[in-house]
Image 1 (tube, rainbow over the protein chains, first blue to last red):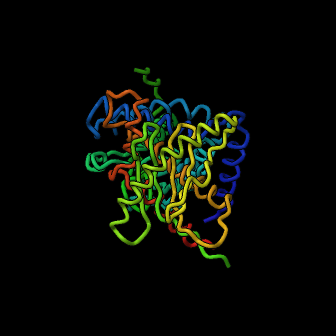
Image 2: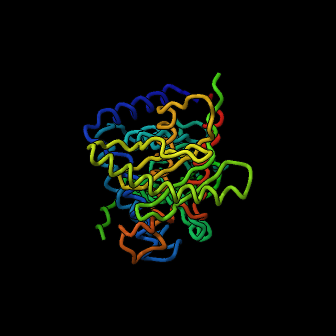
Image 3: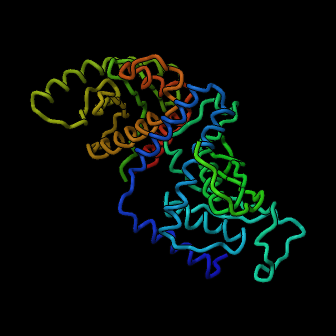
Length: 208
Length: 161
């Protein structure tokens, strides 16, 4: 659905990506992340715990990444959660990783008003969008062994943390989880992001 | 149109001369042992060629036709001293070096991608990295992607003119 806004986001994402003076070698990035995940597995020996740690790490990254993102993109507040999804996919992932996941919006709770201009509330909690990745730079060389498959490892779980951390800094509390992953043998790699609630303006919680 | 090159077998051998993966594309099962034997005897020839190459100060990874024993055996050595040996069926047509080099490059890339898998390290925590047991485990039956890639290369070679 190429509405004018969607096209703008796409071009904005590409411009920011091209405008970056320093880019990292993709192989180095993939190998570093792979070594990190394997080290976590060796340290914790429990795949659920590794998932949690990856998400926590992502959260810490996300809270700082959003600054860089907002500074470069100069985007204002999103009108509704739908727009959040578009921006995350087309500008966010594009400008940092040069990938363009597709967004599917869904899970509008029944009470939500269809027109966005008239409602003061941007979206009801419970709305969600799904990001579908057709390529994943983190998983470049990866092949999961059986124990990881059985243990339920989500290799790229750091993405979920980054999304959660970044959105929390702009007053949205969300849950981001993997639904499927090609590394696990599924057909596609998908993350579902669900809005839990809007946060009141608060003094930010200190870093732990 | 010249007849296609028939790739019979591919062998990867570690720097310590341990077999990493030996894959055959011919139909009969009993030939598999034969290719193990061919890979093994190629190692001596490779050593000779390497010494000659070092004397000639050439850094070329492609070692050329090693020897012929009812199949043509070609060798290639990667910078980390992993040896790739392939056997092609003897044909009357001239086999161009550039074709064989292309096959070796594809095999080398497949190998590099498989070795990049971070999970190879998972079950060998206490070992020294230079032990090369990790490289050898890349060819074990646990990691199916490596075999699939080699199989695809084999099919592609047989499919090209």
